[in-house]
Length: 151
Image 1 (tube, rainbow, N blue to C red):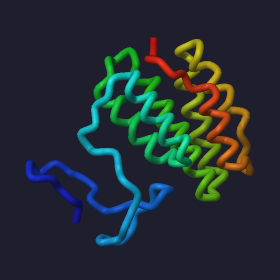
Image 2 (cartoon, one colour; image 1 turned 45 degrees about the vertical axis):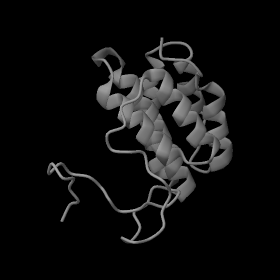
Image 3 (tube, one colour; image 1 turned 120 degrees about the vertical axis):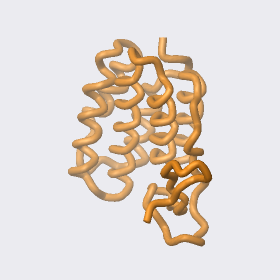
Image 4 (cartoon, one colour; image 1 turned 180 degrees about the horizontal axis):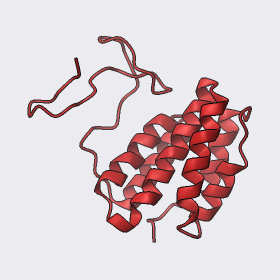
């Protein structure tokens, strides 16, 4: 049975570990990004950078997903691509190199269409391999991720 909020909308109430894996109810998990998080582009980049600096790309993915859901149509591919790159980084942390490459590649293809500075994020993602060190991979994406908004 799926968790639901008071309005009946699906919500995942299970705690998650630092790699985004669901934990049993009642466990002490990592703080989650709220389901109703709807940041500006600048706020999404700032929040995602903080999570990445803390080694939490799954949380950064949730930040970008929050922006993707509320962004103007012309930006949605960008935010979806950034979310996919962060899921790819999460797969590296979990030791799933094949899954990491799939998501990193999909995300890179989406963000590169937005030109500089996102082209650099896409290039950094495509340079990663299935056996890349997760911490180094996160650092390489952070070096390319812009500090300001998407413009």
